[in-house]
Amino acid sequence: MKFLKFTLLLIIISTSFIQAKTDTIEVFSKAMNKSLKATVVLPSGSEDKNQDFPSVYVLHGAWGNYLDWHKNVTKPNLLQNLADQYQMILVTPGVAPFSYYYDSPLMDSVQYETYISKELIPFVDQNYPTKKDKNARAITGLSMGGHGAMMIAAKHPDLFSAAGSMSGVMNIDVRTWIGNESTQEERKKSQQEMLGNINYDYPFSPYTAVGLISEMKENNIALLIDCGVDDFLIETNRQLHQLLLENGTPHEYTERPGAHTWDYWTEALPFHLLFINQVFEKNN
Image (cartoon, rainbow, N blue to C red; front, top):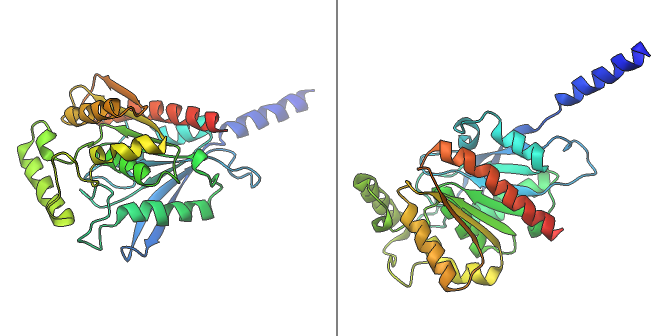
């Protein structure tokens, strides 16, 4: 009996150390002729070759990289814990600063919509135990990554069943931002280099999230948008929210205390994955 109890104790102890693992991958982009890194967080149980998992792409913001969601969150192992909790594969791609995840009509080195939708996702699906179905795939992100998530999902409804934005740049028009005038001019200059002279007024350019509200309505993708009330991007989020109300697009919208900080995004991500998990369960 003592031996049996000791064996059971060993099993309990050893299983407590079974948890999500994180791979760093490097994917070559033919569209841009360069390789880009990403992390893939695998939930516990992913070693079972008979089980597939839903996947969520979690995008970083400007000045960021593929490790942001691992290094900058204020709760250790946040992604690993969430991957375990919801039995999801979480992917954090890295892109260039200020690229906003779009395909530039002027620069071959800025083709990040194509990279995410046609290169990274197929690579992950080929090499990891994902459910290869839009009903089990979602995308979300913070700031610039929120813009990327909403834009890419709007343009590729065949790939995603849910999309989210945390403190997102819902309008790349710097006139809608609050404060930081020097940063605004820098961003406007980089936008012109990548996009040329686009229309910043209504009807909005398809290179900005507010210019894709018709697609958001037609695609029937579940949408979650949130922003802190002290965030310098709050007005762009309110603008998109109002446009979606006006054209009758179902979506979840939340404002709560907070600013453009990792404290806010650390608290926001669990809500996004809860929302996404509920969409996945409904789809199944």
